[in-house]
Image (cartoon, rainbow, N blue to C red; front, top):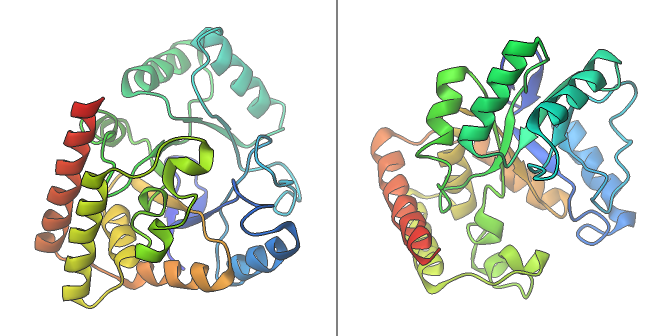
Length: 267
């Protein structure tokens, strides 16, 4: 297992984090223990849980959890109040660190300023949607994180299953459909096919290449994978052994940037 130090916290986290958002459905509750056990046996020490998920986040909680995250900006609560609350959680020992999720770059910088000005514990990392085929955070948030030494934990690293192979992408509930949204566009499917073609030419499955590209981005500390059983976990872990050369990274990045730009245009 490969590990990365989470910013200035001193905490070493596995480069792949086991996501639990769909626990209880995929995998079923009866099968979740086997998947968690396989992850622990493989050296995974990073699990993404939330009280809004269908799981009970207690299996890795012998003491205080490593980090609590504010999952979305709250338009009805001042940012200073949110940060003060997170700081109180840290000072009271209920969590070791706090982090932010899906905050835009400008608001993350504002959060860092507020924490510095008021001597609050700053966010330890940011969690955002980031994948080869969804690079919307690349122009602003990624360079901001590099500038301030703030690590990124990426969710949906396989673009909602689009980069998990054609069988996974063709499931009835894939991508945003799992959360009541729309399916994949023709442009996204076309880009995924081009990535799969390159991956096949290089002798790798598409998911391994997609994860390899993401983990090669300097600001990315870990990627949250939504695997459903131990075999999928093992397949994802194999990406840690893949090193893409600069030309391969550039070719993949260009495909993803083009489809990201197209999605921005539709928005």
